[in-house]
Image (tube, rainbow over all chains, first blue to last red; front, side, top):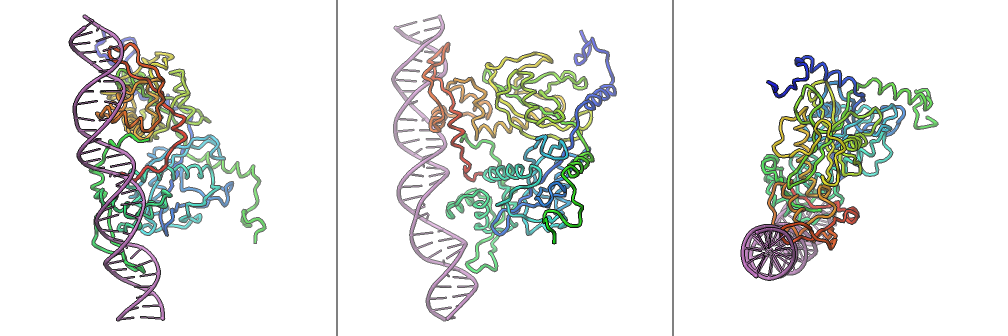
Length: 250
Length: 250
DNA sequence: GGCGTTTGTGTAATTTTTACATACCGCACG
DNA sequence: CGTGCGGTATGTAAAAATTACACAAACGCC
């Protein structure tokens, strides 16, 4: 019988140092590949879904649009890398950001094998000034985009599908709107992103019944018609009341 | 004016070969990290959720349970790596498999920085014989699992949450059942995985109303009570009728 | 053949979803 | 300052979906 059941008697007892060295040696034997993060940063303006793009800085893709990305540091958590990319371009890092998917096609980068992890972020265009316009950084209409650099078209399409699904079950979309917004703006957002037509009264009823809108008492300004009430979204209350059971439906 | 608007006049015009060399040089400048895939392979047996585990082969984690994983080949697509891992342990690769998330904590592996991409798979325990029992490969009860190797506890917990959510909107759970199953088995599956109690008649009504169950005309056998009808799931019909709009609900 | 256990089925009450029309408000304009 | 335009705000009735709930029938076992 062993005294210490964690260590079989047949093995010499190595110290922690040796064990770690062994682990390091094992890892050293693995193939290593470069990793990048690519950020799909959505915005909403003039009733259109926008995405933040630059011209690819790779001459091979000269003229083509590219997502914002960078390689991940040697010891960098990928979330941190994504925030870093965002911060370096928009100056902001306190925004909604979520990992979406990893793309690993060995042919996706002409320079050789590069994995990329796609992140999605949503921010309000008016609240966030771009820090630079290098490489023609700008908000590009989502519609009609095609022929992007790398596999960025595929990444973007995937992230758009993700957004459509996610917006129906999570209020992340509200990050696309200003802090205070009218119900019309909210509905436009949903109609545009989900590409559906919604009944105004039922939409309104739906949102009010969730009881997550805070009436600011304020009204729209500078509109050539009757101004609508402005609301804020009660993120705090939402976070508290997460349901895990929705119901089987497919 | 440029003759060719795609190429700025200030740049010498490199051929494709030079452009690719440039891309290769760029990629070569990126930090490189080892990548693994880890498979969370769920099963369902005796009314319990199971997960396929081995003893960690890393001495540092001696005795701890570990997910099935392997490093990704130099030029290997990650999906392929995940299928390869599954095949090498269960002999099967024609199963439901989905990428779930990438874990990148720099401290997650004691041997240094290793990224891992988690994949979820579901298979019927009876249909699939394990090819080997190396490293004590076996179906482990999901409940009560703790203190796993690496960050596998976190990975597993994340995948379980993913499964719970996904099962409500997608029939992937049916991969956990035999080809022909009774409604009771189906309900048990949902009750166990989602950790809820469901009304038998309403559950039945729900599934029948989807019109995706095929009545085989057969009945359960060897049960000490009235035998239930056996059904198959009409995956084909399901695939055809995918809805993209579900409705806002959060 | 009776007991124990699980299958199979319907209905009424409630809640949720859908479709739809009219009065109100602010601005612009003549 | 009155009228028209455009968009906001609001309620209700019908339809659909969800919930709660009870009893007869089938099989194995003894």
